Image 1 (cartoon, rainbow, N blue to C red):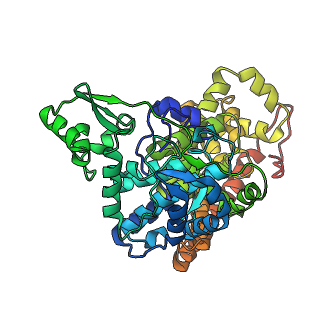
Image 2 (tube, one colour):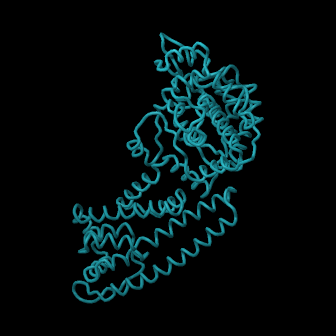
Length: 515
């Protein structure tokens, strides 16, 4: 449970995202990608369990009256790290639904404790930069932030408002940590108990001057308690509170169903019985053993990239496509972004995102060259004989040459966009030829990304060997087909430009090494 006024920004396109979705409390937005698919499989058919006994023992001795003995937790850092390592490698898809729910709640709470241990001088969790949005931990083989756990997995997939009384943000006004771990077998009774404990506490709900003074939770996340599809729910926030609160509160709500709600100030002071050690062996142990192992190499990078993209929720394809178009205009090579689209969105949606982004960017660059930067681009392209030959071929054969250069690997894609703005080809012909010519290369690189996702999942046990073999076989076939197409295109382009006379006579002999 984090401060909704703090920055949600992720690196990269965060500013654009903020402009699009505005500000306020974090929304309940479903994660996408592999982690979402695994949680969905858990909800549909999972049957496995998870052992939370280590975390239970830590809480039994390290939590009292909702507060945490961080010095004790620091002295047991190896046990905490052992527990989080098991959380990091669990097969989410194989867990039963309540087991997944319990695991994600416990993971949030344990990682919050670890965040404090790793930052022992803070007096409030809000002093830890990016603690909810930027610091990622391995959970079920996926790098997830605390916000991912709460707002992209727990809330949207399980739609249980009692989750707000279970996750703990290391602060006085947060729902307190119990002295036991949540378990799949006892989860329903545990969530009911936590809801009653929170809502019967006068610090969170009390009758004042004919109204109710209630926790800020109901201001930030009020819709979670009344929305259709959430369970349990009530017709109003006051009615929900009355179900779990004291007799005094229940009578007040029954007497006035439209009772006024006032929201308490939120106390972000650290929920510490004893603070974590700042110096000495305890602090060193926190820093050494407190790092949860994360995937490295290409698989790790791709996993982190996918989780970063998933953080944008439903807007991820739109934001990605806008960014792709901007990179095209800025002459940034798009191969990595094309691969990333396949990895993050799959083949179908990934292809659409890249294809539209690339064509929009190409059209913008063409128009910029033709109407705004003509003299500068002309100077930049002067002396490039290969492009000069293409220019003269365009005068004779029009859009056909544009399509051939799109298919040929000889000419840099982003340079072509500005170059054709200087030629006599019409915008319509250029746009049509670009649509046709970009198809094979886009298909290839997006499929590369899809295959990369398959290999990474296989390495982590999330994909079967058969699925991986099919992906790789499809990749090889795609490479062969695209290779044949580009070979033919290059031969035809050489023919189109070979006989074109440059100024002063003679002919241009195309040199494939010039790009």
